[in-house]
Image (cartoon, rainbow, N blue to C red; front, top):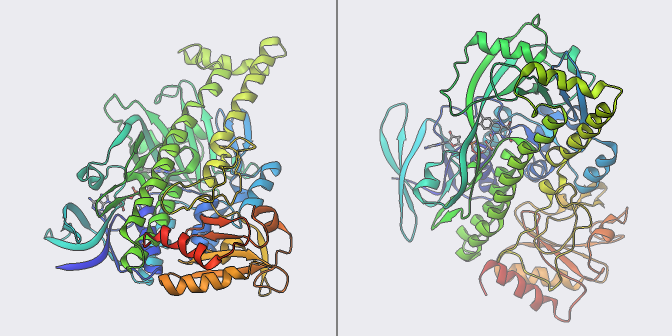
Length: 580
Ligand code: FDA
């Protein structure tokens, strides 16, 4: 029988990332995936700062930079009647407003990129294979049984048809929104699937003349009277600037699925662009359902689900693949420590505790973002009538020099403002604070949010939060606190006078076998806080410390030097690892 330590089902963002992280950490793993290759359409594309930080830790940021569309071409999001027609509003998105850019730049060493899933997945999976992952395409998961020592999985080769078994110590169910594994282990799900239907049309057409002066990844089109979709809203999404595109168009999911042949697809493209003279080369069409469903538990015994298997939601806020990658990043280091015998299996309980609340949060956020198009429709008078001619007339009211014209303009302005919760939700993207056994409380209360927690990221070293970013000078280079952390090990940051923590880290490393790299931040020390940014961010005294987990979340902190740092750090690490 084929044996492996971790069997990963699925090669999407969750599965391929799991393979990459596990191989990087030296864990034997095997990926099986149903189809002959990775994602065959662009699908998810917004790659947020957190996902780029994670890939930076894996050494892949340069490749993302080389193949992704940079942030400055992503953010002039347009709301219009057609690309060639009337423009209703424009919103700086993904942190590109000069005022918001400061928030984003201060928060992370990384920027957003637009990286379509069919380009991103091969980067991740390719690197995973280079680092040791085995990958079997055309291989379908059928069923599994588990016992005290492992999981036996029945699979089928979809080319030859033969069935065989794979034995693994752990099984990762990264098999997407129709996850059979989540179903087989009976994950408790809340919400509903397929509450609305969407169609994707992928095509080539040079649209530079309509978009290059307002570069964005998203062009929202309000087109009352269009022959499919209730209110007539469509999305023209940039895949590659400015000649490869994906249109998302709604259809009534309660009706039989529409036939989208070349003629229909080309007509939709021409309508939304507002120019039927452009040459269109159709690439593909597909139908998909919008979901509002999340699992309240991700785990059963030795089976761990992640990604869309656990959280299923519309593309709004661009959270799909980003969250899936972060799920994988959360679990991988824990599995590595447990499989290496350095942590008790109880460490794995923290995966569920930490990621399930985020899954719920993003499912609800993404769905709310769809609802928040309602005020735009309202402002344009699209909800007052079902007659397309009247809708179009209502859209003209905002141009009038009249009281109702002014009211319509004010309403539209407020409605567009609300879309910041979809397109500039920095707090949703970076603000995760974990609560679990893998976070050791320091006795301080959770810091209050001083600004809107969805729109703004609130940096803190409160245990469980993501490590704040600060630029430091290190060995003649400018590096982020995130560059010094990560790499599959724990990092302890202290300052001048905190040297006692170095001895503690060395001692604890030796005792537990789990590396804790301790760094003194200060002039002529391991790294120099040249801008004083770390001093402002660390929330502990110079002699205190901040202990950071391999996934760049704070494990614990100490406000100042303690009497017996060896005992204190030992207690913390042993409690976290479950080896007390
Ligand atoms: P994902 O679905 O990517 O991968 C599942 C994997 O499991 C695949 O490799 C599949 O082959 C494999 N698999 C499934 N069943 C199997 C079995 N029985 N045996 C073996 N392998 C099996 N998100 C977003 O943020 N913006 C967007 O624009 C879009 N657009 C979009 C369009 C379409 C058509 C889809 C289907 C999805 C999107 N999404 C999206 C969602 C986004 O793609 C999604 O959140 C991530 O891909 C989730 O990553 P996962 O790895 O969890 O699943």
